[in-house]
Length: 509
Image (cartoon, rainbow, N blue to C red; front, side):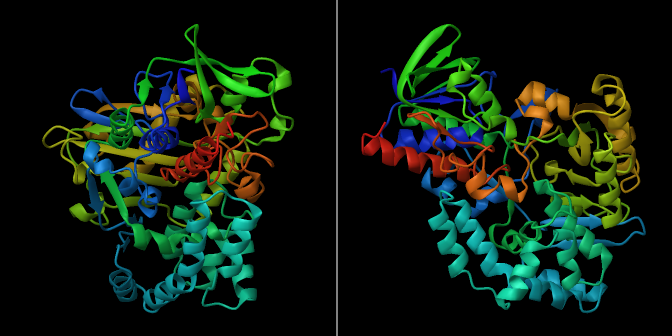
């Protein structure tokens, strides 16, 4: 055997699994097709002097896990910069809202602007904090029926169980009506909830907005030097514990002997292992199994969707300035630009018709406000994430339309921060086809698979594989295709490592 575990892909979940395995004393070999590790959590200097993230940028979910401490990643170069305020929402009339890490401060400011809404916000957080904690705990374990049952039965909200179920089973776009009157506050909460994928009108999505309580617990942060510093630290951690990480090493085939995965073929070279752990998209993973007899039944029923969002990454020669709040604290926060729920629903309707949003809601990020390593003195990096953008267009191709769509996204932002367009010195537009081609995100879905209730928990990626094992002995899964889904959390990587460690220790692989 060349390795105890051969790992396919070097996304952040695969690296996290590898780090736990290497730390436990197992020999790990990671193989990544790109020239850098990290997958959608990576950073490159694409414009001289400017560091561009290529995928996820805001580190929120991973702060709700013990991963950073358990792997001692601060010893391998990871330094987090705390971000507070957490969220900033500007509006066309010049008004704005801040959500701070401190709930009381947030509520106080809300009450000054919208009397009664601060008190309502505190009640909302208090009511749903226990539920959100239960969901977090479920994310940090294999989604077996027993584990989920224990957490749901043990969950105690401040609400009667009938009220709790009513909120959980409703669309998250409606849940906010139970607590708030001010549309501006509702749009902020709903737009943040929409980052997980399902639209505000989809049933049984209430938990996406009820998760809001945990943002005040874990906070939000940025690795100094860019999002990819997290995965660079993981690479150093793996190598420190004796593991090997190979870049520019695409896995061409996952080898199978009978009903058992035995290794991989990389650039014509065979590497064997007691187990194979795949962190790639599930369709890519099973596509590497040569011969249809080795592929699982029901794979064609997995819903990848038709794209999701697109991001315009900009290098600016000066910081942005919001009309609604010119101060620096607006640039520190995650900037949620959505007038109202009607704007969000209209964008989703256009997406369903195969058209990019003509008036996209936006999440803007200017992390150079807290990290001077990202841009030259006086410069700024600005990321504009917009929704919704279909992979398959009703008219034309992305190659034909990308320039106009990117310009429309910037024009929409310009209404809130005039002068931004004139300061652009370089850019990268990551539309759904780009995301598929460069990052292996099939059909441009950054979550791998749609995050609807029928593809969550025990049904992600499909029944029988939710606990990170597959139909083939020795083949394990991790990554956004598995529980709990996409985002920079790492829970899938940690959970998969624990499953694999048990099997390795008991010599079951």
